[in-house]
Image 1 (cartoon, helix red, strand yellow):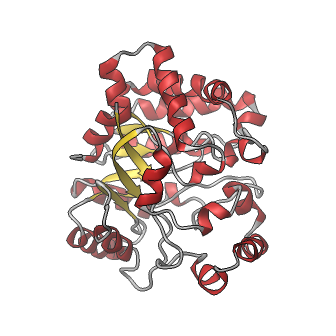
Image 2: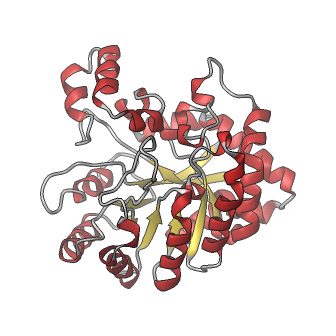
Length: 337
């Protein structure tokens, strides 16, 4: 069965402007030194989130991605904005231009734009659209957590609930652009209210709402599932079944000397993936790899082997399986492989 992966990050720190680019360009010939310097210069909550800096210091280009997919047949992928640090008012647009000129460009692009600045947003969206016909949506990260030990990705921390953000989100719907929403599970109720208020904008919830510390705190499951249920009630929201193996979720696979077994992966993810599918249905769910971020914990082959096994155990059938691995992503992002 062919896969369309709706969540891949393509980057090359040597050639694209990212936070780590100056470090990689100066000391890239000494990888161990780069890693040591990166750890020293990076706040501990961010180090803990990433798990291993090597995966953000190294290039992740389409050829590397396709090599990682191994025995799985990946027909195409959607690139989701990856921290491009271009200068000027149209800085984020540089990423879209760069992607458009790759030898193996994505089927779709989820670009970055500033939803909290109406005048700037309009200019950025115009420039993104002129730069590539692959533009399908925007991601403006709003992940925020009350604990100082958990990295907050936005400024201000309450970005999700500001009037400016609400206005920007509505503007995306007017242009038939979707919004990739990445927040932590503690923000899901706020996110559901926002989705309810702006039904004209299609929202894709990334990484199942990222339940921070899930493995160490199973008691949080009810609150997390409650937040997912609130999101599922909004018919303009779809769900990416992804990101459960990020270090921040707490399974700790990235710390082990050997990779997790197939059964361990299935056991860790199966009940939560089943709940996501139960709440949203296969027409609003899509499996995604989140590579190279999840690569710190698992290989692509092992991850999708586990996904396929989970779906088989649920007994969903061929049509539902095709939707989960390709059809929903193609529909939501308006793709043609």
